[in-house]
Length: 79
Image (cartoon, rainbow, N blue to C red; front, side, top):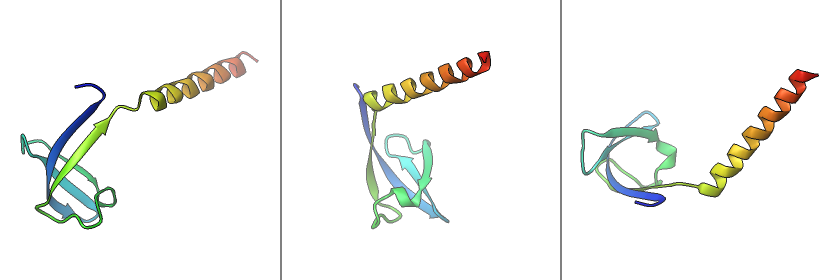
């Protein structure tokens, strides 16, 4: 599969500001997203493509920032 997964969903309904999406391959799998994350013209019944991509560089940067914060907190605790 690599660093990306692409799948199709159908826009089942919109409840308030949430979009309920059904995975096309198994419609028992559903999830919600804020409506604002969908294309502006998306409507109930539309088929959408979702891509989930692993951001390796961003993950490493975030891990480094957390490690630096932990090191600073530990150093501060020793004072």
